Image (cartoon, rainbow, N blue to C red):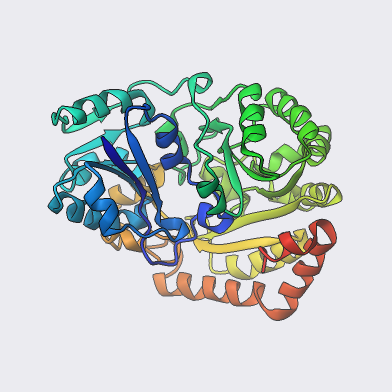
Length: 415
């Protein structure tokens, strides 16, 4: 069978982290890695600018699509187009898992949960033309049994940063995050498998895919010890409290960590506490970020607005906080209630959702009624924060700081 594996991405302001880093998306590459040799496949990553061609549609018998919530309407439209071209169409991913009945209207089949446990069965059924309406994964993937991602020369040329899967899931249960509701628990690949895949890729600049890379210090130390031998540079994601462990920070830096997304989210500890993220202490941020800077690690974080604990003074407080703690890369956005999260369910119960258009759920639109301000006041406040933090003077200061740590290549990504 000829199969299209598609990451659908609409034209929007959605700040997809994989697009920002120009790194292979985990979902579609994991599916490609699990593909039996009897089948042929092509990867179409619209996030990276790939375009689905008429020739590809004519070549394929099956298409599987995955998309983030703000891209899901586009994915549904694409699914309908492919069905009209007589392809079997499967939809998968987080949004589909949380709203399978909605997705089922647009596809021949949907995958609920992680795809790998049901992938072989689904392909066997498709080969016989007998797709079931849904395939539900009741187990979490055994990370020791995962195949390496495909790393052909053509694929590696399409991405500025190569990606390697390290772990899935997170031990934390933040109210606005989809990771815990989807993956249930945190698991990591054997370190030797990660190292072997990095060696095989031949790449020296990598993104290590894990939702919270440093949450298991013993695992992280083992990984960093082996990474150091490879002389690579890498970027990743961890909660800021990992920097409380000075030895772990030093090991990460020595292993090649150059750029870290820390998920600080807000300078309001009451907001973090109510969101289930009270282990992050904004009062400690300045010292912890200084520790990361002392090890030449660039620090990136979203700053989210619209928590129920946010009053109208949160915007000025955030500007002062970001300047004080010296964040290098800042993404001022609206907190967004994605389906499947506690936050979404809360707003649904309280009848505070303002939009039914999934394209608005891109962190750049206000889609719910804030508690202590109007939607327009929230929007105006975030615009003020963006304009202020990205003024020429502040950008130049951050550019100079990042350049002093990591040179022009990394600093060019921060402005």
